[in-house]
Length: 273
Image (tube, rainbow, N blue to C red):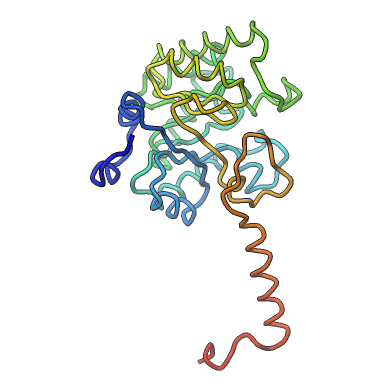
């Protein structure tokens, strides 16, 4: 369902996302980690910007999301906020900043909100992190949940394969999704689960359900910016659609620059003072 120009210019808030779901308008969400990219995708009209802990992979070169620290996430979030005007900015709480200690979870979330000026946090897990989620929500901080494949638990799973194929895990996921809605989360991300299950969750909840590798039956989609722009060589899961091949563009441009520098063609007289 299309919206008018005035509506498109409105600041996106957590309540507006619920409105979008209610009227059947799909929600677009992408990651960003710096000022320049945030400014570009915000200007393009993205609804939600996720300052993802995927920065650990695509920005810092780590194999998993686990090494990135709270300080690093706050740095990326501050940079993104400076480039964002319209989109809702959600920040991943990194591994170790909320699991198992609800007081530490609240302190971590407060730091993110106060120091970055971001508008919400995202947390991976269901019933096992309920106490931490509730404590953060009680402080007035909006929380987006994350179920299915939860990359911070990669060492527990041992694989990035599709989750919740079996009935027991699927039932737990549905239960966790309902719990997250009941305690006050404003949205839930479902990662790499069967499309039929994701569709059931989205129809069961009144809050928005955002999918990544979860089929088209969710209320919106999220992708990692570097993946969808073709900047992440060797990563091409089934759920990923590449909208550009920026990696090749950069290689070509840098190659031409090197040639021009070495040949003396750059800078020209027109490019000199």
